[in-house]
Length: 424
Length: 150
Image 1 (cartoon, chains in turn green, brown):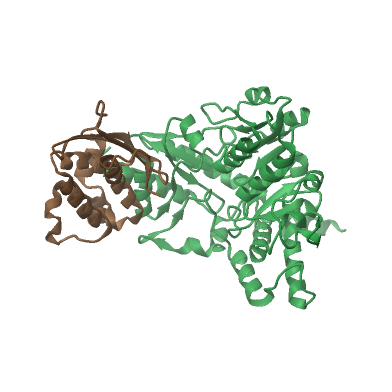
Image 2: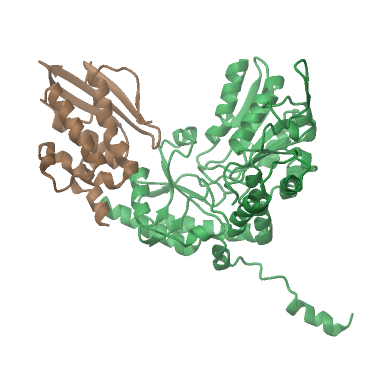
């Protein structure tokens, strides 16, 4: 190779600028172009659900217009195409979270169903009276209630690891609650109400030292962070398609093959069996054992395309961009008189939960809505978190890589309007 | 901004910041709890009657400006009213919340309650304004369980 070429390469083939081009990205999301109440939409409710890129919408449309057929059933061409697309999506999910094998990926409706599956299937066989399930004080209701149901059925006990005033898990207290009776740790990777990123690597290590398996709720992590279940070494990982720029009604349960193989089925029906007589049914192998009935085929294909899209942008860019946005937003909101941020962990995703002195979040939400700004107000399906901070509700702006500084400025201007209406 | 001003009229802001009759009644004849799971609003209504009329009424709880002001103005409105009058006012008030009746004269008997005429433009907030009333109704009917808007 000549020296001339060597010199030319860096200039021409240099990888694209590492910074994220937010205007280009926004162009990929048709919904963001609309106006609400006559104002440009400022969508800051991404932790509830994220918007979908055109590629995802097109992929689902293409499935229904060109490929619609059932999977793993027919020998005809369409069914083969649908099956290939469905299983290709499973492989994309495997790669996305770096699972060892595609059969460790179970398609479910969402994070809630994934957790219920483990609570019912793992719990039914592994949890007995007097046993304990350990969760944290910052869990979403979907990582509390399935365990409460299980504990009630089995006479087991739900233990809760506390958090500090910043919304960070107290690891020492967590460790003390790990006992010989603990059968499972179920912890969120990123808190939906506070934005806290939990030290999940340490959580898994400490639990494994006592041979306790760990389920991680990744609903709020998958849209923001690169996930590697082999490095984490977690036993179960869950996330939702619709919070990860994919369609609603599709989600993922990852489980180590050894667990999934040992666990009994969650639901009975077609697809999950290998043979059925009235006397005896033999169950199918994983992942099919846990996918009774016709799955959400279009949703699964859409999710696969959403993950392609995320990979195309790249998590390095996403993390860097969102971190900048979080710093900017934290600083900007801190300037609003009477505003208190709820959730000030050192390690945070771009979630800004706050209360305004003397003004109920519901009123904040209504007034912001008239400015075209969509935020979530309420308890965020995390009432114990609200109780911990002594508030009944908060307003929450949850940001992703298509949000901008200008949108944060619009939020701040909206909050000044809120204060104006209330004469504060 | 006009619709917002219509919703958050000064009287509503005033009552939300300084709610009237905001205390429990000792040993009340009637009492009920109301809860809106959507936003977490909670209200407890206390009520005593005498000769079939509301002799005293008060409330406690935590909620948004609309629900707090609605409860506050409700207690002011209902003191001294007969049960029939209470039922008639509630019916009219509910119609005000759910339909556009601005400009008609059917609201004249509602008095201060007409400040809630802007609520119908905000369908998600109708429950905020009606929760205290449903709770009051339950208290009068001696329903002991928590009233939910869902």
